[in-house]
Image (cartoon, rainbow, N blue to C red; front, side, top):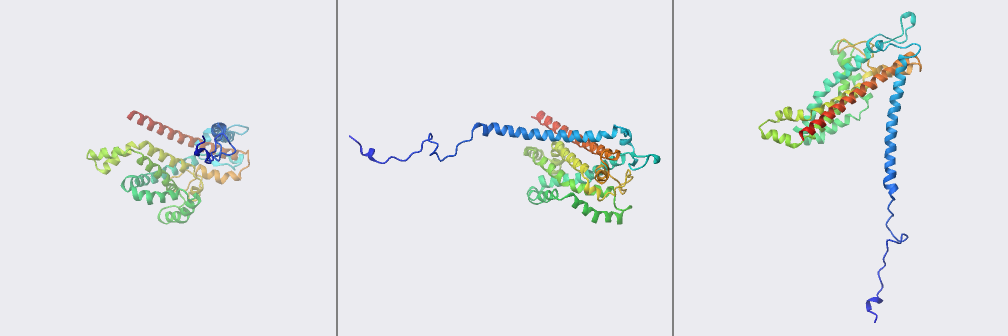
Length: 328
C-alpha cells in the first residue's frame, strides 16, 4: 500500500558532491592558502634584506674609495682636521679634506635640538597621558601628529623668514647660526619624542599609579618616582630616535645655519653639517674625483653614526626586556 506522503513532491536538494549545482564558491587549495603566501612573504623579506645589504655595500665601497687609490686621503686628516679646501691646487697646499667642522656641526646642532625639545616633549606627554588624557587624546596629540606631515622645506622657510631675522635683531651675529638650526630641528623632532614618550607612559600598568596613590604619594611624586623610572628606557628610545632624525635632516638645517665651514664658537656662529655640505657639493663634483669620494666618505660616516644610534636603541630595548623579565 502506497502512503499519501510518497505522492507528495520532494523538496529540491543540492548535494555537496555535485559541483555544477553547488552555489558556494570552491575553497582555495592548500597551495594558494599556505604555500604561496609563505613563499611570497619570504620573497619580500629577502628583497628588503638584499636591498639593505646592497645599499650599505655600495655606500661603503664609494666611501672607502677616498682612502685608497693613487691619491688617498688620510683617515686621520679626514676625521680630525677642520681644513676643507677641496678645490685648492697642489701649489696652494691642497686639496684638503678635513671634515671635523661638519662632524662637530652635526653633533652640536642635533644635541642642542634635543636639549630644547626633550623637556617640552616629556612635559607634553605627561599632560596627554596622565593629567588631561581626554583633551590630550582628542586635541593635543592630533595637533602634534599634524606636525610630522609638514615637509622639512616648510620648517626651513619659516625659520628663514621669522627665526633668522629675530635672532639677527636681538642677538649678535647675522641670524644664520647654530641656535637657529637647533630651534628648527627641535620643533621638527618634538612630535616624535612626544608620541613615543606618551605611548611609553600609557603602556604602564594602572596598578603602578593606584599603588602609589594608595601609599599616600601625590600625583607629581607618582610621576617622578614611579612612572618615569618605569618607562625610562622607552623614553630614552624616543629621545634617541629624535636625535637620529635630527642628525639626518638636511634641507631645513641648511636654510638657517649659514653653511660656513668652521667649528661653531658659540650658538650664534654660522656653521655647516655633514648633510648640508653633501647636498650642496655633491652635484658640483665629478664622479670618481677626490672631492666626490670625500662626499661619499661623509655619507658613509653618516650611515655608521645612524647604525650607532640603532645599536643604542636595541641595547635600551634589551635592557627593558631584561628588567620586565626580572620583575616577572
